[in-house]
Amino acid sequence: DQQVKQNSPSLSVQEGRISILNCDYTNSMFDYFLWYKKYPAEGPTFLISISSIKDKNEDGRFTVFLNKSAKHLSLHIVPSQPGDSAVYFCAASGGQAGTALIFGKGTTLSVSS
Amino acid sequence: DTGVSQDPRHKITKRGQNVTFRCDPISEHNRLYWYRQTLGQGPEFLTYFQNEAQLEKSRLLSDRFSAERPKGSFSTLEIQRTEQGDSAMYLCASSLGRNEKLFFGSGTQLSVL
Image (tube, each protein chain N blue to C red):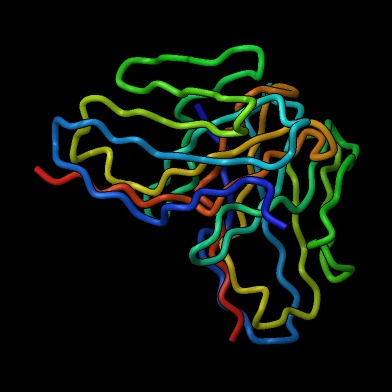
C-alpha cells in the first residue's frame, strides 16, 4: 500500500514556464514533507521541505504548497530551466512511519529550451 | 567536505555470493539510513541507526540482510546469499535529527548475475 503517491510519471514543460509537480499521501499522521531531485547515477538531492504546521514554503524558484485537508502537496518551479530536468521525488515522515522518509515513485520532469 | 560517501559505486556478483557495502556519513550526523531503489520506484526504506543503535527495520530487510554501525560512525550493509531480486541501487543517507533533511550518497549499484 503506497502511502505517498505521485500519479504523473512524467511532465514536459517549456523553458521559462511554470512546472507543477503533484503528490498525494494517505497517512494523516505525516507531519514533515520534502521534495528531492535526482539525476541519473547520483543520489537524491534535497530541494525544499515543509512542516505540517505551514501551508507554503518558498525558496528561490521553488515553492511547496501543502493542503492537509486534501492530503496533497505540490512543488512549483518558476521559471523552469533546462537544468531542472531530472526525476523529482516527494517524501513524507511522521506517525507510524516513524523517522523514516517514505518516498513516492517520482515524476520525470523534462524542460525544453 | 564531505558529503555522504559510499563504496563501492558498482558491484557485480554471482547469485549466492555475499556482498558488503560501506557508508561514511557526514561526520556530525548521528542518524544514518539505508534505502534501496529499483528502476521506476522511489527509494524504499531498509533500516535506520541513531548513533550505533539500529532503531528501525523495514519488512523489506530479510534475514539475509544485516547492517551495522559500530561506534556510531561508518555503517556496513551485508547481503548474504544474494539473489537476482537483490539487484538495485543501495543508497545511504544521514541527517542531524528527526525532521531534518536527509543527505544521500551516490549509492552502490548492485547487479546479481
